[in-house]
Length: 351
Image (cartoon, rainbow, N blue to C red; front, side):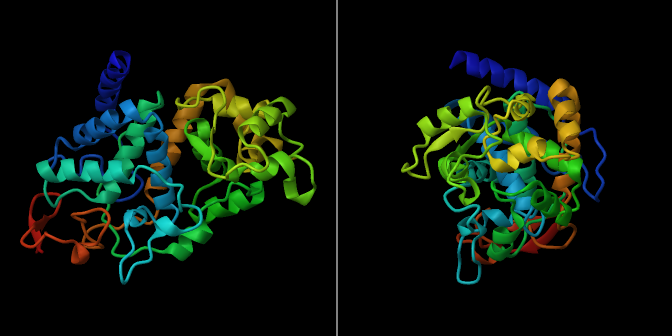
């Protein structure tokens, strides 16, 4: 416990050094809350760091949650919305159902932020900062998060079912899914590196172990030694919800080992191994580059995370600043009389 707190203290220093000095490609700015919520980065970090002490997976989960938000109608916190009479929650979409984690931690962050900066910070911005914190706590890079997103008034379960890449996707399918979001091949390979930490359900790769593409045989691109390890963890008749480390070497660290694993045919998901094992793929050189130089991976990861965080953002008077992340303000309870403010502290709505 003491060593973990020491790591957290070191991460705070790195986190603070990299907060607030960057340029965004959109109308967002790292200094958006400088006047209205100057302690925002500290608040988010403290909540996530405390959660990580008992849940080392939370960093990876928050990075994934941000990804699953941005790929569905943009980075607008729509993934956080619960079912209501008018909203079909994205959380119940096939790629998210019983899969996404960290919703409770995001709610804890929101509560802490509202206590200090009421009606000011969007849930979409909280998600973006929390993803950065997840990277830092995993030993990965920090960056200045462009801020100023607004929260959506709706969700799209249908887009969640169609836009989110599946673990069985081929390289062409992956490229297409990323292209729809304005992301290129380098973004694909760099963001896939987030699979260097966290866990996956056996059901996301079970077909690779026993009956790949209905051949009755395992995936030939899977290292045979690793195959036997995975079969031991995920028997053919096992529950699909059994968990396995995405990275068999450093499962709780954000590092370049993910790419080394691909070189050794030890990628867990088909969509991972496709980056290296697809014949003639232009992704192979990127995998080799990121594997041989972790700083190159980190630089590209940061650039792609910022680029992804700009997808379809709501700004200005679009959407709203939710006061509870799971509900739009019209459906939130106990909020009568709460004042919503802009980033300069001006009153823009009375709920």
